[in-house]
View (cartoon, rainbow over the protein chains, first blue to last red):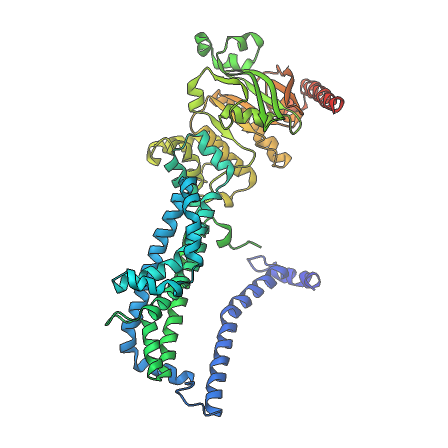
Length: 292
Length: 276
């Protein structure tokens, strides 16, 4: 097809300034179409689901304390936003703080591990133990041993989030090019120089991969922590609002709070993807667009 | 020895045996053995005296220990027996290395890559800007300072790698099959440029290769090595004067040297076949 098309279209294009043959034009059209479909398709699915949901609620006359329709959820979200916004902020704050702690804790431990095999051998198994222990199971203990509410919630969210940062960064720090490592040896780089000029930059793509997983986990951690720890009085987060609404059978508000949790998760993902792009797009394969 | 340093550069380039003997020794391998594990002999009883201004090729089939010899010299490995003796500590301090792969940091620009050896010595970029510019000019990459390695062709990446080796003003450069992965046209061009650079810098080069033609074109000493166990079979002198240009490649002299090197290499391979 492309071959038979090429003849006439190339002939017509010789008059215009940019020389584009049929194959090139076809590829550009395909790219444009793909870019449109990338947002158009998910939007269509979203719209279809909303309509289906609303349709089912209307047709089967489902009471709103069982399943509210999407428009009632939106309405509740708008009406209750004043009271939900404070809780939203609490959840966002805990998530972001837990993520920051996960970066410091996970990244710091990974660096410590690469500096000393002994430390790594001694501590790594316990990191795995921390990771595989169901956090719900030790929550009651944390409740006993940690007094401050914010510290409890942060601790739980941190435990959930830090491991991917640790394991990915540790892997990245060890994955530097062996010729570059030799070069560092020949140029007599100090331990610190090796870390700063070779290991840290090599581990960046791995670290960012871990960070994107940790971002979602930090939010999950923040919600789980609040479910298990209860609220700390005025600073109740979204998880507590979901529980509270369920006690009062205020199902539309449960959904409204859930929508906020989901939006937060999406926002974290987008921000971290953007940061990844920002740091890697100039040099790393994963962030490069292939030419041709 | 000291008077060797006062010889004019032209005498080094002439490469006559008399001039060579007068030049100071930079480094010598003193009956060096390298054994891996308990029984794999990578290198047996290698003796080599490197004098200032030499262009030495280590030529041989794979497994003959030529790369091992470079790793011993660069200090990445310690010999099992014998020793690597540095007569010129300055040469060790400024040692330049070029690997088979360009080995550039993908996250750093061309200028940052070339800056690395000096940066590791605590030199700020502003301080060594002229050195970086000079090294890049030497390899013909002026204007590419801010490019990233992925934007460059294989030959250009190798040029950056050479610029990084030159930026310390080395007295000795070790090159481990640097052009083996490049196409022939690029390799010829880089060979010509390498000789031109050396004329300007007057430095010593130890060059590992498995190409007879490359070794004859570039070097004034060809050390022919054989495998299993890795060892030196013989040394050939290529007494054609520098500077050598593309015309040298078609001269009868060049062809004669290539034949001699090929025959010596075939002899080395035959020895292996007999042993096996």
